[in-house]
Length: 372
Image 1 (cartoon, rainbow, N blue to C red):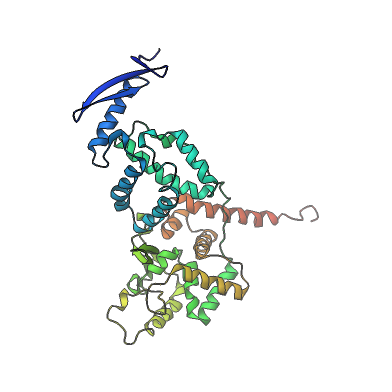
Image 2 (image 1 turned 120 degrees about the horizontal axis):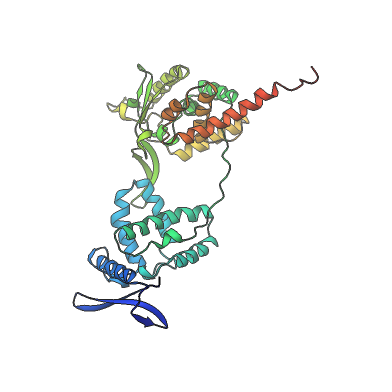
């Protein structure tokens, strides 16, 4: 059934409605009466929202900046705000979208925008920026600032997913780390990561009061990261991103003696021992402050180069813990809780890798059956 229209513009049929708003007669056109009414309602909402002035003439940059400052930034953690700020500054503020009217931005316009980005940035980088724009247009649609969300139909360049591999250390390498920690307590942090399953940010946020040697537990309820505050990068301690990251992790007996020695070593950094020692970082810098994760990564790289080990990362040490759990048949659900995974699938991927490797070893036992 053909849509009803009541006027022609540039040779095309439209449905036109009028509405007096703030003493001014406004005209709205649509392919149908419903679409014209939606444009009218969006205009009224936009004009009355206080988010921006100008109604249908509002520029994308004005609406986006208001949303970014007053809606998004107050609702996210500082680390996320820092990441969004980079996407906004480098790929949105001075883009082709900036000076366009918000209501003129279509899926085709966004496709052109993403094509322009693709000549400068990788699909992975563009994908991060697209999430910011998607959130913005979802908000605009929800608040009826636009009739339809153009981002929903836009084509965002997608990065090819790399096959996930398990970069966990072998049990032999873990024993080497243990030996290195015994010889030099500065290396204890790497054994601690490998046998606790903590993320590097969680480890560096630990204080002495988070360790209970009597109950042999680690309390994980915060994370450390480097963020920009007042124009300068500094260490920021915050709550974990997900509730599942807040947890209590048992301390393996193999760690107890070295952990006790490490704590005693930390105390020697102070003279005299401060009253708030229990609030001090468990793994502190030479200045008795929280360490930067970048420095820990560099220290690990130097150690592995000296030992001629395969170069890995602190996160690989976390994978090592998960792998050890899988090899010792610790239930998948238990391991997911211990490492703070919000989705058990993340843990299962590593378990599957271990199972596949074990299957290869088991099937190898059949080698030579025809010659037997």
